[in-house]
Image (cartoon, rainbow, N blue to C red; front, side, top):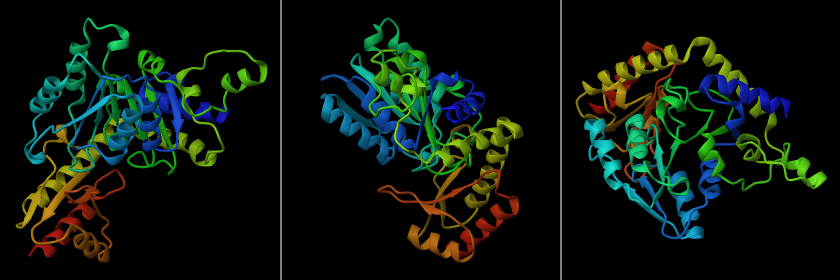
Length: 343
């Protein structure tokens, strides 16, 4: 428990939150499932998400709705990711909110396109819809933050979300098999634990017969024998970024992503999918190479020791990621390699 508390403390400093509000998980997927199944959804409740979200969100919501009788609606937030606007995205979410909306399930940075949502504006729209509602009828804004954490310096308080879910092995460079869920005091009180926690006071209640309530973080940290060495090492990842400075990390990530986007946009036969505006994108950069299968492109790039991936969605793109471990020379090499394939 002391080691877990060290991870919570390091994460809390980085995120600007109370350590007691942080649950430790094994992944983003686990965190999303804990939240969506822990909320007390009722028949007739409306859950709003988007067509751009990943399988983990869609499937967790489908399973939770099947059990509770809630309705899940998916809406598109943009027609062309390259020309997305913050006002359009915010307006679409606001227009889709209903009196029955209990959950707004969004992803900070879309792994399908690289679009970074204007979460603060969306949070303000949700807050306006919640004005005058009883606590049990509020819409809770839940954010899958895995491609924003470590790439963008905004904290949960800056974003205005109620729940912040992320793995820590991507842009934060923590170990695999690690993650966290932060929830505000009000939202955390509405998320019931669904996996027994091995930490106090939950375990102590079983031994003594007491009924002491657990803080959100401890009560929603799944018990069982986890990959503890990986979890505890996540504290080093938060400390590493904190030592450099989250603002400096975000600026460098944006600088390199902009360099990559600017270079790829000049290549004939290449369509840039991700917005060029740093306010609407982060470290992910997605492109389409005319006449080339994305899997073939990734394979050919790997032959040149350039690692890219294919977006795991129905509409597949070639996806790159710039970060503080990427150099400008590597960015330029990737642009040149794509140009050779597009010729």
